[in-house]
Length: 364
Image 1 (spheres, helix red, strand yellow):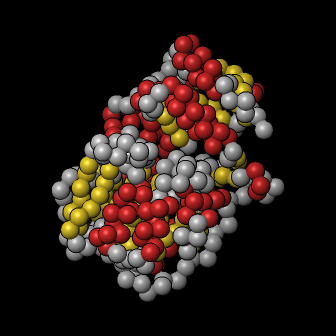
Image 2: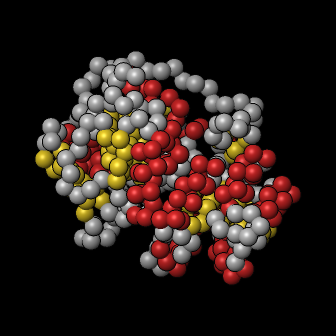
């Protein structure tokens, strides 16, 4: 199957570069190139692309405004390109709030060691988004996703709510969540539903550049009832706080479950590790500190990061949950733990927070 892509950027050079990279994949074809947000809206309506790549800063109409209008009029998966600066991070997070599904740094050398690796990553991300289908949504909700196998369902219906779990009665000492593509919105959905009385430390591992994690943590802290911060080396994890692993580094743990100390390392000696931060490394480190007293949740994301770390946790008695396929932007990481028989539950994104509160006996 060949997917249609609309490339949007005010730079002729960058539009051509992205188009050339995409069309090296026989499964992708660039059906149009827009110079600004208004042209993007018009071309999205007339060309019906499967995916749009979108710049943030453009004349006539910026990318964030264009995302909002496209998602309101004719929803389509959108991949943002952004600069690796604080302002770029804020703009990208605003675009994700507006409905964009994923992002990549605009400088390809920032995401790969070599040109061929960067091209492959771009192609993979675009194809992963193209496999999702977005149908119209109410103005106050996130898009409704469908895989090709479920497209026969009524387009305007939302995923059916699964029955909430009853608590298992298991003892817990921490909550850990791993995510990648689609993760910022998924994490926001879960964390904003947790009450201020949440009495466990929370550890968050989201694949994200370093300049983005500080901005994302600050945003979540403003939106959530719990406290959210970017994790710092040497600090003791406290109940009711969520610690986000810094981008480009690894978040590990030492000490005891009563006084877990966070270690932030540069990971210079582990060049074979693809993801920085890595869900696998953080989960495995948590297993050594907490044993089985952890509820670990794998949210939407490409690849299989988290599977081996979740396996380590489960071998010590921890509970592993996965987001279900229908509500994932990319059903990669959750599928990996489900297919390996590691996760005990697969559930819609909208039910995860309520089930966490029930399972961990949290009121509010």
